[in-house]
Image 1: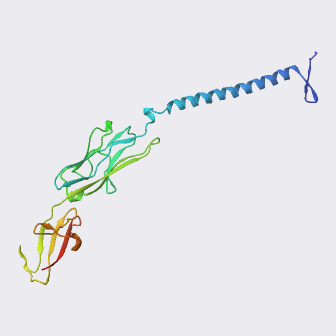
Image 2: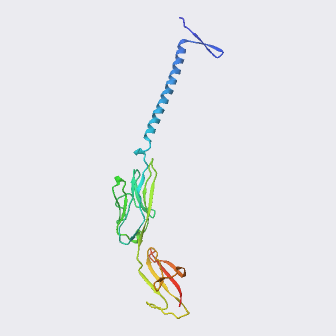
Image 3: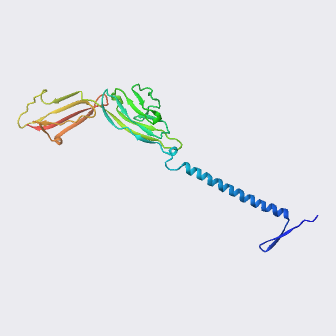
Length: 240
């Protein structure tokens, strides 16, 4: 049997290569480049798909965000309060907190019979309703949206301030009543005591309908026994 050979020169050296070995060598090189080309094409296709999915304006990739946030409110005792919260493209779960305490995700808030969530959750509406406010409802409330694998957490805060009219207003002096007498040349000191108001009451003194200089007054603010309202004592110094 006669086997043909071929001579190949690489650099300054010559090699004798059998035909079937040479063919196998060429085939290996071809397959290697073909596999490399397939990998390159696959990578380009994958990059193209990802770029299409993440294009600006895509609804699937839009971040969740607020379109309505709660606003602080002042309310008289017994009135109802609605704190509004609307989330667009909502992906995380929504709940409210009061002074850092979580109220939960249920529409009827457990343990708070006067609290409930109002609105259509499918539209991102999560309004907090407080029926018949009391002093216990005074505080900071947050609408919180949980994070997901593709979106960040959100929160927006508002304060509810319960307004309480003072329980009494008393002017004290040398003598109780509407008229206080003084002696010319002597100092006369009056004191106005306003009890249990919220927010803290402000006091102004008038003489014959003219507002007196506030800088001449001494004032002391005291916390009421209930801890949620204030009493104020203010005294102008008047020379008879």
